[in-house]
Length: 338
Image (tube, rainbow, N blue to C red; front, side):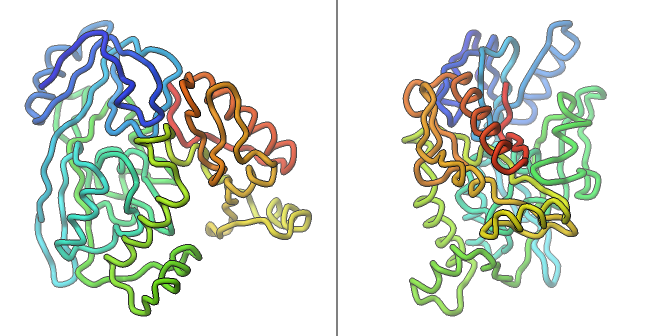
């Protein structure tokens, strides 16, 4: 357990932004968390934010409260059926290490979510997704501490109200719940998801005709390393904006004007590729103060050198304005701005 005042958060957010918090609390066991919450939850000025890997957070100022950082570790197979393996991971587990462990233990499904920075707890809060997969497809149950009651509670997949980068933990239970662990329902039988063109190209280039889940993981890691900046070298929060979803009428009008527009179907609606929209505005590599649009992937905003959080926010607004001016489409941040 670690408890410190006036703590520097620069190494705990992947943007590498200078920010401090009033109090920093890191716990290695759930019992340490329970004790800390019992001591402080009735304090009139108790304000907290749970910070895992800091890979989807942008600090624009110091945090006048307590940063709670889960460092709990543990992965196990809970039970099995003829077709499925149910695996549980503690909230502080590193997400990509968990994905690798699942594949090694012949529990399949998460391979397209490889190499996403962050923790297991955050995967359920954010409903992380990439390359044709989302966490909600595999989450079976979430275990959490409910701060109002002080009880440990369990929530089924359906009750989590998962949406596109959304969950009940970002809305109804925001500030009221701290995730302790997540159970994933995975398959014993590989179901290869090669729907993305980049994945298919990797398999073709490497002459892989019958890919395994490990091959898909290798493909995703290779693609992400080539397209996205390593956060250890260049500060970012991954995809800064959500891919905007528009109705069929809006999409038809846009496609008529921009025949090459990149999109994905989303039920009766259409999800537009935000990176493509930004790129068409000529913003790749565009820099504003200490922040910039990544030169290889327009969906990524980066710390180009000693950026402040407000530099990044100002850049994001420039990007939003340019995209709206050209396409009439509003981009919404995926990153949590504090």
